[in-house]
Length: 400
Image: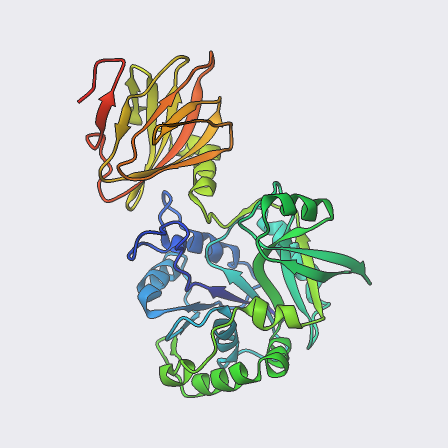
């Protein structure tokens, strides 16, 4: 039986835009001819997959349909959540719609994750599908390449050819993350693999109220042009619970599929900047490099209310002491150790370290070393022009 992909596509991506009420959700951001949702749809084009179900909301409906059309999906179902009730009700409601056999394997995927080594991922799905039953759940763990406080973790024990999950740890501090990794902990990717009957059984046992309400909301819903409209009045009665809290933490039959692959949810500007840094040859155009007395900068990608740049600061180069009225900036150091002034404080930043420059914050970059300093920069704002600079001091005579 083919595996049914269910893509969770209702998240707002507020970690990238914490101070904005209106913004583009992360899964729909154009990163130069591709989106995270598009990459997710690409991964499920193989013959091992049944037609997809996409769980989203009315605000994102047109964006989802555009991506489905772009990747030539003729058969699909879009399930519209009438309200945000976290991943528990979203996952359950998506599985309750018609046409899904009880024993069909379901793979729940986030719409905003970047995964390489797709063949390895799919091979693990095939290998572990034979172990699925009416009780167990498989989660996907990613082998950490560094300690992070941005992801949850879990630990496992090897039992009868399976990796039984022993404990979940929610976004620990870096110091604790280092200990967890030493003990063999993996990142919790938020992807789940189980049969439909296992999903139903788990909700009937652990979340009776949610199962009753969601079942009724789906039964009273309507399907029109491949779009399923869940009954809003009934769905609103659902408790707001994540799938992790509602089911995973209560089930003793959780197993892990451990993956050592390149993976990211691009959940921070640091991750996005490092992604552009790794792939800058794809974005580089000579005409977009501009030279200044202190060095040069290259505009790599101009997105929707954001601009990605790479700064190269020559040895002993000093940028002006400046501020911006219309933009904030995220920086990641990729080479060298610059001296950074921010609010009259001095910082020495090493490679892979970050700093955030708020709007109107007075700041400066200096390179005190004998080697070129390189910084990846994300500018965020409605106005992203070089004219948005007020210079207070400048050794090259450019002060306002």
